Length: 237
Ligand SMILES: *Cc1c(COP(=O)(O)O)cnc(C)c1O
Picture 1 (tube, rainbow, N blue to C red):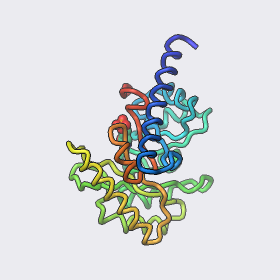
Picture 2 (picture 1 turned 45 degrees about the vertical axis):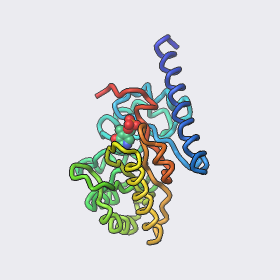
Picture 3 (picture 1 turned 90 degrees about the horizontal axis):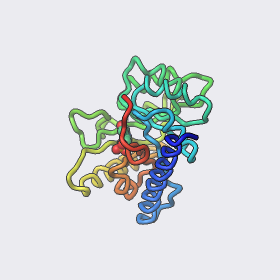
């Protein structure tokens, strides 16, 4: 190992330890088991070597938001057993590759995309895991289904056997006040409870990132998506 690789391994391990400690502390403070919250490593704009370093430290689940960048890294890391989550905007002309090359899609927000993923998921693979992205603060420029549209999208998943609805994902509005972020997370949790009442066996609340994983965990997050605090600043584009 050269000095540069060594340094990368050290800082990766240190950042990872700090993120896992934050998750554990947030779980403790809300009386939850740390095993109840999964860490998704958001590796967008990070080189394959950075993912390899996190894999060596035990990380298996990685999130990417651009298809072409993700496919290149998947090829570079084909020797590792990783779980790939697509977390970026899904365009219709990208669904075939996404359905074939990812294990999860967390950013589904409309019927057309659900139907295409359901039709295009290869038979040889297990069903594609789905989270519906909710635009919880109903911000006009933001991706995500409106909270009112989520019930119908969840019902549609039932009719698509190649998809498995796992839960909801959100990216709340950036708030000055942490209490407002917490309020957004609570509304997503309430929406998930409604879906459970409607008979959906969902187990995933994907919420919380580097800046707000603590309030997300306090509100019931089961998956935090951490990029910057795990990998350092994003570089590659
Ligand atoms: C980039 C991104 C993240 C991670 O953000 P950080 O602030 O770097 O932790 C999480 N979720 C989504 C959907 C993202 O695009």
